[in-house]
Length: 108
Image (cartoon, rainbow, N blue to C red):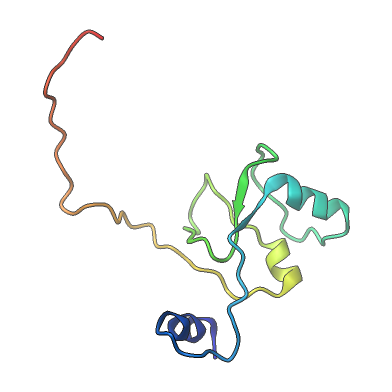
């Protein structure tokens, strides 16, 4: 089974050949510590940020064209994780969009 077939089997309460190997994410500081402990730094973390900032992993839908969020790839490769969820850059909010209505305009 591939990852999609496993995911669909799980969602349909069927028995897959094995569970999906995904992680939701990691803290930036943890990944940097793992680099210091020997994790191969093939891709690295491209964006600077707070050590407590979350870095997306396989189970978190991610838009590959995002320039403000990144997905961790070194842990993914070192641990042999399954292919990740990819999100399309589509607005999934309410359709049609609501028009803003100003009920009162004050100086506050």
